[in-house]
Length: 320
Picture (tube, rainbow, N blue to C red):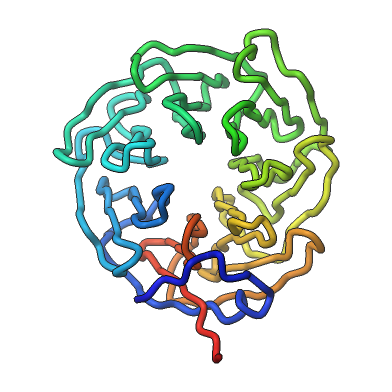
């Protein structure tokens, strides 16, 4: 399964020629999150079957499987050291856990949230990370300390994300406003707030900045996703046409060049839109028997990963 360097230009035609290169059936239940290493060489996933699977992206093989039977596992995230990861818990309590993948031992626990953690985001530049919970708080942490470094109380369900330079973070609140905070002075409150028409039919369930920091992508548990300008808050696109008739959070992701947006759907298909025009580029079909909740593009290689209970690796097949 040879990976092509992502420096090869992504075009509508390249995207339309993506095909499944490998399907993995390592899991017995829904894969609830996945994360590429920054170097693009490995992918880590967590599942409702309480397992963590690490994949080798260049060889297209599963490398290791670890289990978290005691606490369950959700929202798995690589830290900057490729042999460690953060994850939220599905059992016992809502503590965030810092795991050594090398020996499957916990390095540190981060207690504080009193309800399910629904947002977990690692800083792109240092050991800081953000968490958001159904307890209506966002917490700022440092991997080196179990004590929360900052705490924000919110009027509703939060989503949170760092920008690509790790200097600011965005908090999406109550599915209607985006607040931007400077990390060095976040305790003074947001430096800007964008109000959007409230999504009455769905909740915001995810938020991501594009790699160039110019765009913010908001995913939901409904039939829409929103793209806004990260500086002005101007609504740019509303992406629709994918199926979500189960009210579940579907992950949306940018391509590394921010030209394209990908999302799964509850009917097992993958949808791709042009970020600039909002036009649907392609609907990719796969053998996903269930809802595709996880979709991410490799940051370094021309490879897409999508997951339901199965994990699929996609590559472009283009006739020269």
